[in-house]
Image 1 (tube, rainbow, N blue to C red):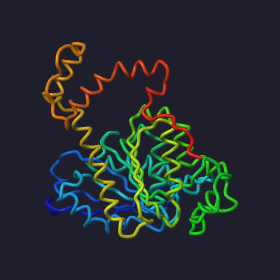
Image 2: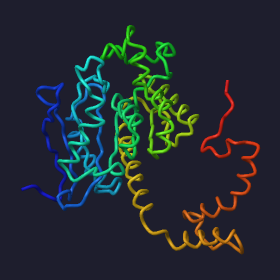
Image 3: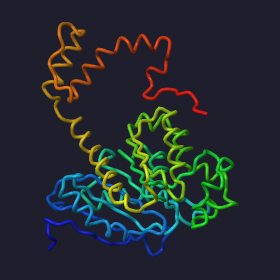
Image 4: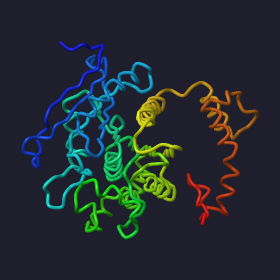
Length: 345
């Protein structure tokens, strides 16, 4: 009989038509999972050379973070998708890793575990190659995931193969699908799988879905993954797609900053869960008071509110509304989240 006070790892294989022996996977269930409550589901995508075993290695860290309240309890799952698969749906159908992770695996997990019952409770996270995979999957399916977190994603800075220089092809020699990596790769396949290209092609759906996006990378990444991550940040900015971006000074591709960065990414996922719960709760008394004042056309003095509260921001936005509308008459970008910035070179 399992100890409900402890987390546990479950290992199994999931049949797939392109994997006759099944796809090995691991599931980490949090302490108290068996209490019958529904939990968020996070699919964690491993980096190059990784496997489901990485989740087992991370278990003590997740146990500590749950105990410390860094992140809420959730079911975390990881599948062994091949050491250097790049989560590719191969054109010849020999393997369909993107479809497996983006569709088959979450569907199976929802049926087997009391987790990820809907989009709002389903999350993607990935490290390095897995960060690349998580982004391309989420950008193609923003209606299936509430959030995606990419830790040092292995991205290349450009939309097309011709835009990628030798500096950003260092990882090509490590391994991976030849049709996606290397001198003779398929340029159209690269572009079709490129998270930046997918963001541009699917921008309207991504914005409309409210998909939460987290990007982080070190500025001393030895594979120069910071170039591609910075490029994607700028693409998302120009497309007016909300996202959180962290460029960490002195951090590399792994190393001593790695564990704290994983912690921060899952704390961020936890903040999205908290936002969802707050949105479904009744507004606080100060928020109701401010809304009432706004509904009366800002007549009279505003109600007293804590400057650190949501109500304070609601009040300030209401006071600035007329000025923003006036500015928009001559500068339509006023209505954007992000401004259209001048070039810096």
